[in-house]
Length: 601
Image (tube, rainbow, N blue to C red):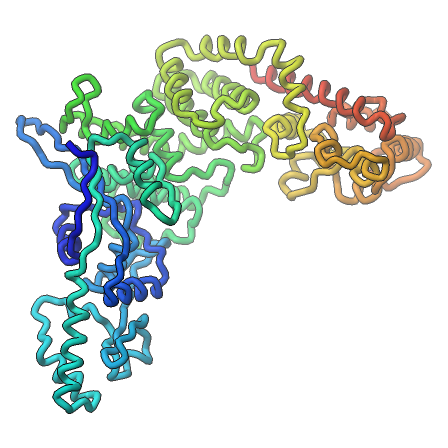
């Protein structure tokens, strides 16, 4: 069997397939993002006889029903949704659903005398020369003969040749529904990697669909096992987290779902103010699938939702039904208010008080999957918190889920399910966080100029958890500086280093030279050598001057330096000691991070 077929199909037939359900437009793709002028341009291109590209359809596999009969798989539109929706809007007169869930009509107007298209507006609607909404020409029972007579009469076109010309133009406009559009139908036997590759190669705009997009397409197209409810739970939950102000619009436009049991389970999110974990539908799918199915590869989810039996390679309705039910349970566990908020509390307790402190969404995703798994195993809540905290930190420190995480997700979730979770954690720590890691690898990882380095972020987490004050600050702590979007400053001022020949960005911007401090302290330091401004701070502690943050005792100063991992030699250091300073501070930072990690044991 061919892996794909390429055919030409009339627009009228294609729209008919969609109306009767033979081809499904997945709900996840519903929001219409085209400007009305693009709809106008599409109709204009069709009128001129220009090609408008291919659409791509992916066939669901035929599945064996419980009674032994075969049900033909529905076809899912995976590329071309905007063009099809535009055609439905202009020709059928269907309203479009915008990205904020508002429904609106897009009316395309046509002037038969100039053969020009425009987006309809009040002025056009009052102008007899224009057909303000071309969709009326395609309605069943449209009387073309009388329409032309009335149009010519209202525009004083009385000559036979004028009426004949207008009639020909109206006929040409009506005929665009008979124009052909290319349809590429992909076989269900293609795996997700192949489908993705075909999509990328065909799509001239470089749009990339992820495996989660294909999974959501499968979910949205389902009519038998509650797929559309699952889609709406995920979609509305993620959307309301980003835009809680759209709650009223959703309530107005989707009253049936609002009345369902599911809406009550997600509407709490509009009052959630934390932005540390802001999942999109990919994240929801990954977490729900990983913990509920004990698998990490989203391609497996697509196969299971299609009903695939991995042993026999057949497609069974019972497997599809079970998979949809399990997925729904997993999604509902994800959006559960108690689960979500308790997981956020664990994340915050690590010191992650800002999304800027964690670069890997996959770490948070697996952390939540692990939380839900342990909770479902009836693990004691205190044990859950301890395991999840340490696992999140371990994954950040080691980059466990960087790059392509699916195989590691698959490996880890199975281990945590099949064995004692604490022993799994301890064995992983023994292998990944050995003395070699703390004494060598971590110190080497701290040798970087990237301020967004996970190692620097973990160092900041230690300061947040310890309530450390900013560098040379008497009252303002690091957490407050981060929350107020304070700046990262240089202990060895950048201009000072540049003035003394250290001009390479990668050298003066080392994270071991970074520190959070108040802007006024940084301004006071300006471009002085550390030994200059630090001795002035020492004098401040002896009551001789002021202006460096208010610290007025050597004991308090020493604590501030220790909390910020500043070596005591700082009082005697200038540019010639810069590399020595970096090495000493990296060792101190690594020791502080190790102590921080062990505090969760």
